[in-house]
Image (cartoon, rainbow, N blue to C red; front, side, top):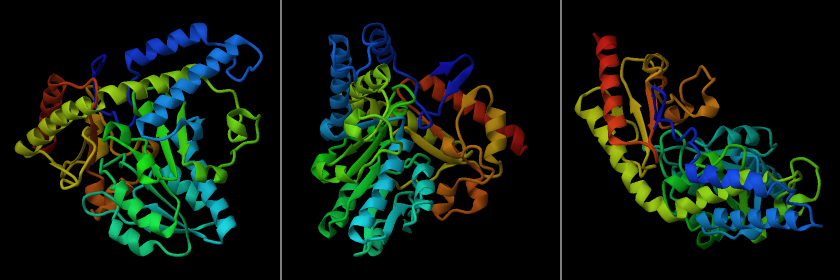
Length: 381
């Protein structure tokens, strides 16, 4: 995708809104503007019905039931609700340990840090995925909840969710997966897995910003309470009038993924592999976490001898990429995720994440390689 003179390769930070999603949202703004919680007239009923249909699409994308879906402002809010649920589980059961991943999103780590629970961290392996052998040793009779990211937003490593369930289910431990990045990386059937909580983000799947979802197993919903005390919308578990057009856009984005996701993942993986193979063949960088099962659009590249911040600055305005998660981009510290993989602080400071998606193509890949070659020749000579 090009935006003016810039090639956009930062899809894991945010995806552009698909034109089909935008069209559906615009239509909703014109005809479904009534308050979806207005129960006394037909226009309110229609808006509510459209939101209900969208919830079915969103939950269906990951094989879960829309009856226990809450719309939120995004995945960060949904993640916070899950960590608050862990506090309630602890109060109910006396189990006071919360297990989270060392490479999880900051919305999990920061909320956990102020939860008052005893935090146990699942380390990352050298491939960037959570060390599930370590998880098996961390789980105990004191574990209230396990929370892990489904697909890492920096290195793209995919967590083996089936194995997580195998560890948690026999012990009767509720577990949560932050699936913000997952729908673009794999097919999901979480109902069959027995997951307790799942969180999703619209703007990671070609939908609008400002809306996400928390989806719960029926038996886990009792632990969810509102972060703010508002009205009785969404069963009293999250107050506030739902943004109809955002919910509809989110639903349409998920519908498109359900129909086209497998083919899209295959196409994007070809582009990513072309990029990585050319980078490595020309000797200008190498893929970090090469052995991981990873997001098809992710390429975390180590460029030895040049700081990521310097390289990214020299890439402007031609190429948009990132040195780490957008939520941490204001940090002066190198990526904590790369360091959690066992790599040095110096190496972490030299890594750039390129992420490819629906509107990437071969021409953009090859032009990006040429830009990088020119920059690195200048720097290294």
